Image 1 (cartoon, helix red, strand yellow):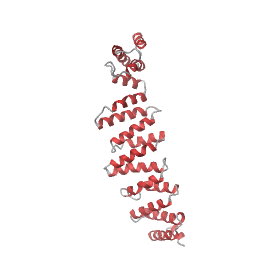
Image 2 (cartoon, rainbow, N blue to C red):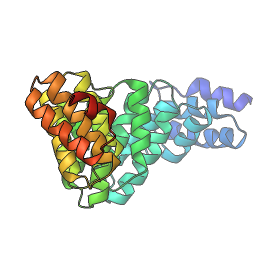
Image 3 (cartoon, one colour):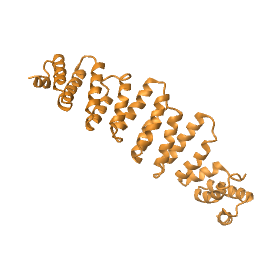
Image 4 (cartoon, rainbow, N blue to C red):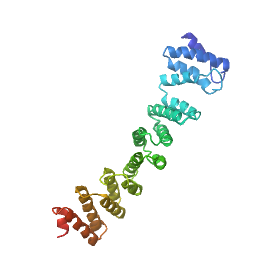
Amino acid sequence: IELREAVLALITAEEIETGGATLAAMVADACLDLGDGESAYRLLSPSHDVQEQSGFNEEMFRRSLEMTTRWRELGDFNAQRVRRLTSVDQRIDALLEIGGQYRRDDNSGQRALGVYLEVLSLDPRDETVGPIIDDLARSTGLWDKCVAPYERAIEVQDDARLKADLRIRLVRWCCGPLSDSAGAYGHYRLLLDTLAPGHIIFDDIEGALAEQGEWGPLDDLLARRIAAFEDGDGRVAVLARRAEVLDLRLGDAEAGLEVWRAVLKADPEHEGAFTALQ
């Protein structure tokens, strides 16, 4: 312990030389074996700033950061080294590890979000990062930072199901925290080509458009859903909603009555249609 304290006192950022860094590393290694991460960190930190010295041991420094739960500094340290990696798979593995380190630090949510968005850009097929990005965007409130990376991921995605999943996530953000009904409306037509018209995401988009008073786009969405539906209760429900929008919101009573007739034809006992046509 006395030797440790002597080395800590002698080796400073101002006086460190190659020999001093090597001595510090030797004592730091012993500190780590003894479970004294704090002393190891204090010994290695000065040489961290002059890493070209042969005495600096990256792995030992990482251990000291992990042992002392300096997660943000550990993430920053590892992030500097990602640029050395040329393999995409290696970069993704390293970024996932860094993202996990940032997530363990209460004040590094923004850094973590940036890391996982980078993973998404490198591999749009990675389905594991979506829920993590959701959680981080929710905790940081940085939903707007996620839109462009998701749009790029959608563009390069060649799997129809995964493309739809990415678009659904983006639409939910538009309908929820982003309050961007226009953005949601911009995606729904492309989703209609992939998803069944009864998919709940279209209900979400309807709700967002109605909340923003976007009655024209809402009528267009409803009309397209009706065209995509097979006969059944789901189609009748959408017909009824469109009739109400035409009649009560767009003031087109004649068009509304025509749709109400279609509702009554599909369901002769539909109370709303029967009342509207009286």
